[in-house]
Image (cartoon, rainbow, N blue to C red; front, side):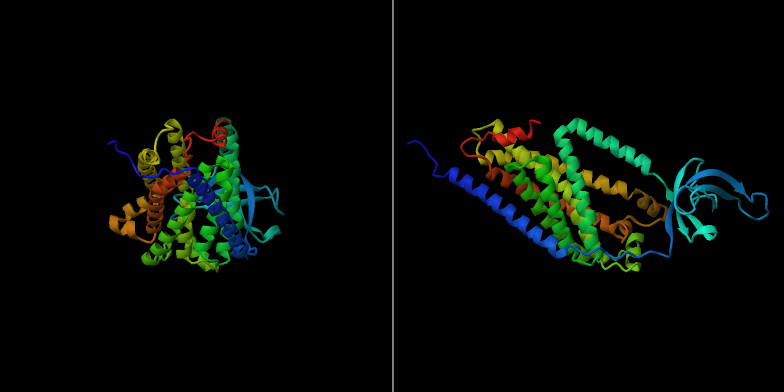
Length: 394
């Protein structure tokens, strides 16, 4: 007697149901995000300024050493700067530095930013920073050109998505945090809004984009939950962080722990998008390569790809955080602190916690996104739809 299976293969009705469920889920999330944006959107936050200093720009015209021959006195570096904007435009002012670590080593012709107090003959100028806007804009222009030439329409969509993400952070996330709104809600609503706008724009409106979208949103929720639990348990104070301390002194309504929570969620969005889009694409490409493959077989093959992606992305996260904290690590080594104290301290601990939260969310979204994408594969023909083919044709 021939063996036969009683398991039922998903049919067209199941496929249509899964895709309807995807559309409903995206619609519900979009509506919830829209309501969240309306409720959390802050009025323009009040700004606090230290003193009456204003920003002025200038160009270094001369540098010289002074007082080197006077007994028991160190040399001073005197820098002459021509003010290039504001009410004192065209006027020369002098900045004085002590040689050593605090000397910015300014050169003739270099453009700088200064703080200005007062006006007219009584105006006092102080060095603030080197003006590096030009080189950064040039680097940004090279980045845009490379992306557009290589990515073409996809590159243009990516640039537009990046602009939308930046606008979301500047116009919603930061003002809402300054206004004292819940960091958890701000992170989830802001991150979901950015994801809902960026993913379809960069990758097109398709079933595979929908699967990636569901995976990314789920990963953000996981990251928010982990961040809320971790921040509460780890009790970071932020006292060793100059930015956190300054925000508290300036009257910010956001707690340091809340900012850490929001930062962990926002920081995970990019890597989550990368992983979920890759996994959804892997599922559809594997299905197209073998139309006779079962959903179980496609899932297993996609998970093998996902495990490789997990391995590479996890150590990429570690190196990224280690690189950003390198000066701090060197400072701790010089002061002779133990490795355990450094890693668990209030200065480096939040970075490690954020990295671990992002890594956990990343690992969990791989099977979730893969399973979601597998459910959305056409049972009658496992080849990509016309929209999916067109998505990668430009």
